[in-house]
Image 1 (tube, rainbow, N blue to C red):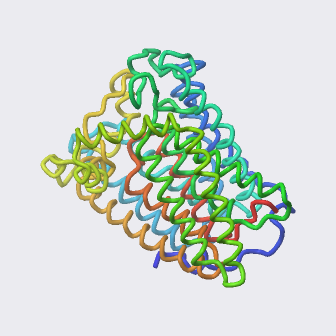
Image 2 (tube, rainbow, N blue to C red):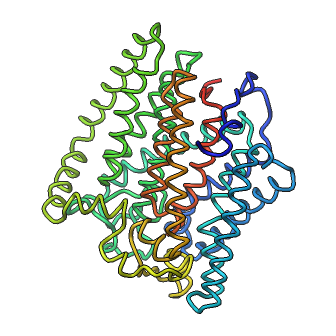
Image 3 (cartoon, one colour):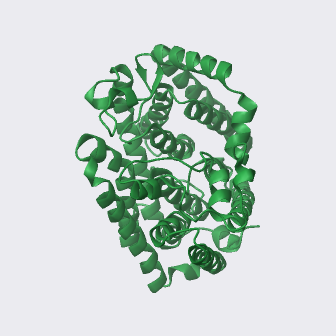
Length: 446
């Protein structure tokens, strides 16, 4: 079981989630989250030169959160996890210095590597130990509000031509805009690249579905929950991303099944009614966005003809062919495969040289420590899912499992140590995941 499970499993306070004021930690967390979500919009629609200042701003806020958690003693709430993170940080730092000494890295790349391999993991843990239930609930409301606001933007992008201002890419070149089929863009929302939008939807999915399961005190709360679900489905349908559609559909299926399984016998009828309403809402959206569905179907067909699905999936989870051929015991340098390192090394041009998959990038960058990192991730997945299952059984709700399935897939498939948005959003998701274990009964509506 994951270290710190006992602390995470303690019953949360029964006080109302809306009765207390937000802490500074909660406000810092929301600030970092909003910068991650909207920094792409600033870069592509206002000033591309804002890239490094925005990254620096959120990194400073995230670092301050970690330092504040240390100085205020917040990590004493999860001492075992904090100790393990400290030991892991020392291991990564020592290995990075060894790579630097043996000429496999540079000081700038090492700093970037420490940022990608450590900072937002510490950020997630600092948020989890420093935030109250009030902070947690307000953070979820802000996240889901951005999802609702993102939906009309994504629909407008889908309906606009690739050359429209709203579909502008960072280099302002229409030819660089990703399309599903000719004339139909892959939507990016407020993000600078399609993967950022996909990651945002993956982060929102368990909480939008959890809102549908959460207790609602007023009739209007049911419409709000339906709006969250509708926004998630609409964004996924017009995204043009196979990963978003498969992931959202899979999470929706797990939610429907889990809601029926975990609901107490006296509430199974209500759970069944809620499932029927959710399915009807999604079917209505599929009909409404039939054009987007047809375009995505064509994309699936083209992809099936041009690539091996089994090989594609195995490369995501295990790394591409040739990764082991490039693997060395020392590694190529922690941080060398990240887009920030490429941006710095090549004067603002992002060049991917090492590996597209997270597993491959981890092994190539870290060598033996990279292999250890892969094992650590697997341990987090097993431990997190185990505790989440226990919490779901205790609360008769599928919500904790949904969150930790999302975290598990993120750890394995997202470019967490390679891409700025994925790295930051994983820190956000990790924090919310730990908080979902502390407060498994989602009091989203008070």
